[in-house]
Length: 321
Image (cartoon, rainbow, N blue to C red; front, side, top):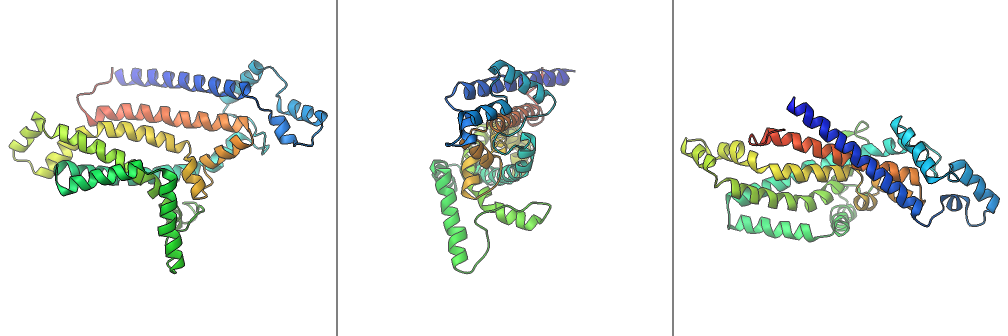
């Protein structure tokens, strides 16, 4: 019963957050000085043409009426039609979603593997050469801008290799997982690495600090005194408790990336939600922008609920009330 009550409260809170975000985004675009009808009609359009487009898009109605119609459509799973493409917003988002999901999941697997492994290595050998190397590497990649890291990876792992006749990693494009799993991984490896190296720095530091704190606890010393192997104490007892802040960070990062990684997608020419967001902002395509913002917010809300549930599994001291 406690778990069910917790889920209901979190879901209701998430719905409230999504509603507030939808109101804020909708109000922001209507208060901003822009005219989608004029943009779509072109610079040479007559006032009559602009008026016709305004009426067709429903932009001549009061803002409250337009928002009410939007909420009504949203309740039916309908995000409306794109001003620019004249396609359902849901169709546009669904067509781009597999790219963003592929990018987010693959990058998350890489940054967790790299970050946690490096953090464990540094924590089990504090003040050693390995610890200093992990610290230096973490600071280096954490400080490097994503666009610069992406360009460097393109230069060294794509351009230099291809000019040498080694066609290992493509520089841009996307292949569906269903079409060819191998090509899917080849085309996404450099984008994965671009995101993972920068994010892994955070996870290595979180893992290191969490493990150093946990390894000094009484229950860890007790487990060692009972004769348990060092790796079992580390994995079963210490790392499990140290993963709590990592799970929190992973939930937030994954939710944000699922909403679209604008810089990475544009560097590697990936047709994901980030590229769609840039296009929609350029064309002032309000329904698409609101749809992407709501979807990204939904990902973050769901990720936070999942994180709270995982707390009870990772740390027995945490209880749901």
